[in-house]
Image (cartoon, rainbow, N blue to C red):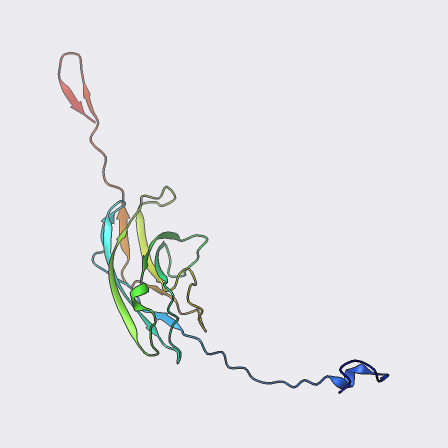
Length: 173
């Protein structure tokens, strides 16, 4: 009412008003399903075939923005980017925009890098949908899913050590 401040007012706070109001944020929500592995044993350095499905469970389509689905190795079923090892990712841009209620299924060969921090043992494979956060989502807590199958990983056996003596005989250790 007094936009140019020409009328003296003892208390200016009666010029303001506010009221609580609910705000609905409408955004997509990508949900991961447990990845399926083509085998339960492999060597570090090999590739495994992984199949996973992601569904947009919200009432809003994803943006026409490319995103990456990532793969992790974990010794347990809880995703922790501080302790789990990222194996790589797959560009799934061909699925954008993903309409509400729709899903996509992808099969990809995932390399099992010989990371020096990893020991021989059993690992879960985790898929993280929209791993870089390229798609703005209403809920990211359902973006990670864990394989039902444990993957037993070992290093390839090295070549046998052979010693040759001066007389030409060989001995395998």
